View 1: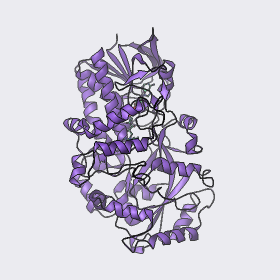
View 2: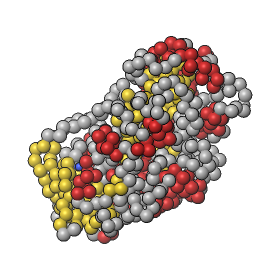
View 3: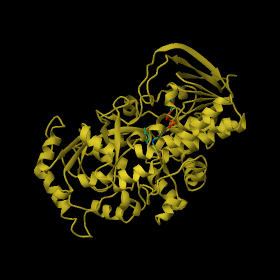
View 4: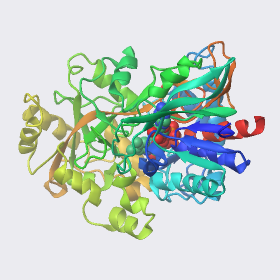
Length: 556
Ligand SMILES: Cc1cc2nc3c(=O)[nH]c(=O)nc-3n(C[C@H](O)[C@H](O)[C@H](O)COP(=O)(O)OP(=O)(O)OC[C@H]3O[C@@H](n4cnc5c(N)ncnc54)[C@H](O)[C@@H]3O)c2cc1C
């Protein structure tokens, strides 16, 4: 035996599993195709937003949340409809995860040194129905340190375990097969990739210098999703979301290649819910890319107006921060626009200053450095937009800034092959919207949403600008942003039971094999069902990785 347990994938799920295993005194071989600089995987790049239910941050802001409300939201969003089959484990995971998020999750992570911004963000507000998709209340708790702060205690644990002889990190080991003997997974086979000193997130070479074979009592697969593999995204793109876009930008590093899913399937694991994915409609091309096709997601508060490729305002509830997949479906299935891969935000300078956040640790240096003073200065008391947002405004290929709407639309039209936008038609829609600002009451659903947002102190202070006319020169200049579809998360994958044991085609645990994190659809092969409530991915890695590590440690 080369170790008690082999963990394939040194992202957050793999680190969480390794943390439990080494805490129980087990010897771990932690394999990754990338170099050691990439420890933590995607989570390091993440915004560090975590889904908690009934948190002190919510209570302080007088948000009444409960496990019942969160469970209702989860079920309404997930829409589990394969309960006898592909969702049979997922629904159990969902219930367990909501209880975890309402229970020990926060205290556990706090005990490892994590802390969170004073106000929860309100992601995925939903589709305007009490029993529809979405978070009834703000639940997105951003970690001080962003994703780097979430990874830090688990990376430190791996380093400590390595010093104590309990863990060996084997970088540049790409697993190409699981070894199965007499129906039991007993190890892995693969190739050694040539050393590469690429910086974190930068694509590395795939030159093969040799091969390897390692054996252990159990193998935990934590190899992430398919987001960087557009071929796989297209192959599994569901009909309900129309046709896949011809061009997409990429929200994850190239190593999120999805190869391991087919490898696990060959070994006998069952893959489920492969048609469920979570891609964003507010992606912009990174002017300073790290990985190929690197796109950044704008997390906007609800004020910017959203237009389709033909310049028509999106209907309710497709407003910024409401309904990710509903918006994607609208854009991809409405016949006149389905052939275009982009949509548009139009907003004021006053809006961008308060309402644009960019997802990613490197796009939030103040929070990533846990620099409270810089955060206050930049986001609450500073003049202008936060520096990374301003940099996109200045250098981003998708941003247009102009003093008048006609100039703005002319600039936006230059970003597409044909001039599809009509300035007069856009003016009419913006003026109609602006006319709804004068009163506290309004018939415009988006402006109702702005008022609703500002009833929550966290949004009022830091996220949602006071209602104003977009065409008010004092709020200018005007900004247009071309938005692309950005690939990110995989909601289906290896079906697992609540102990993260991979199941076979007959629904029985495949001896010796565990799966956790995104490769397992974050638990059960699809804990989110069709729709996510956000901040649930990192937590899903931690919960499923922890369960895998604990069960494997107990049963060896
Ligand atoms: C910019 C960004 C922002 C995000 N923000 C949030 C957020 O705020 N909240 C939230 O909940 N989630 C967020 N996410 C999502 C979350 O970070 C990921 O879903 C999660 O980190 C996935 O972790 P993982 O351990 O499952 O996989 P990964 O992090 O993808 O790690 C998998 C590892 O396996 C390795 N690997 C793959 N195949 C092989 C193989 N065959 N052999 C050897 N090694 C292999 C890869 O090299 C990689 O290191 C964000 C993601 C990104 C990119």
